[in-house]
Length: 113
Image (cartoon, rainbow, N blue to C red):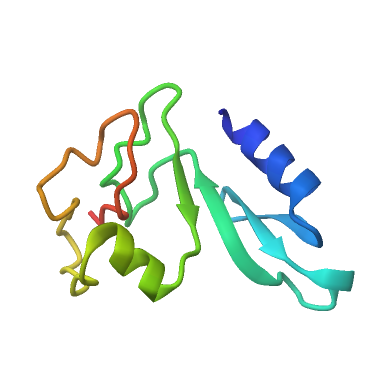
């Protein structure tokens, strides 16, 4: 899927979802009757590196990262214990040292670099 297809799918299939654009990114939020400024976070599709977030190397053509909002217990089931937040210029990948810059796969977010 491409980012536009992800947003379209979410808006068509997740009741009361809206698309919010900010900081050069687009995110999907749950917001029934649009009573909240944004709503409850569902996911963001990040298509470019930011000043404090270069770990995914999103500067490559056709590469993007989907950031879903997941509960802590879901994260633990997928990746094990929640890691400590690393220092400002650290980069982390999955607990097996996976390549978080790969074209496909599910990894937790490479941290701020």
